Length: 126
Image (tube, rainbow, N blue to C red; front, side, top):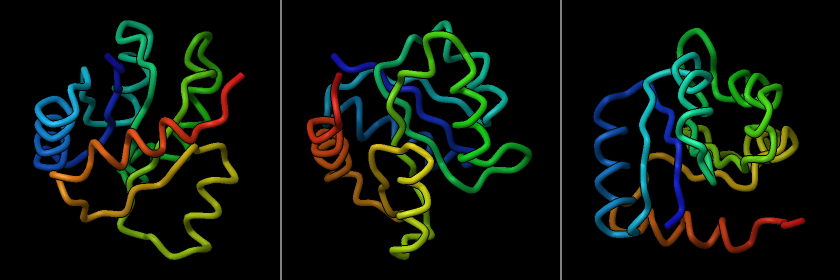
């Protein structure tokens, strides 16, 4: 079972994502409401994957990603960004900072786990 740390400032998105990924995909989800909360939770959760919103107050997704890279153990955890800004140049910039994939919002809850699995299975390993 893949353990996922999901970071999003919107409670509704956290709930829908958790329900979709646990019920449909069989993933184990730990949810966080902010980048700062993710910084604390990542060590205890020991995720295999992080799914993170791009636009969040205080610490946005890319800033949180950069901060997580400095935490021993978390620096190797792959990240998928979720964003409403899904233009090619925006996706390219997220991939350039090190994401393994980008999921556009709004997303289809019934297809979310398949999309996460597709990105997970296509990730570079080693």
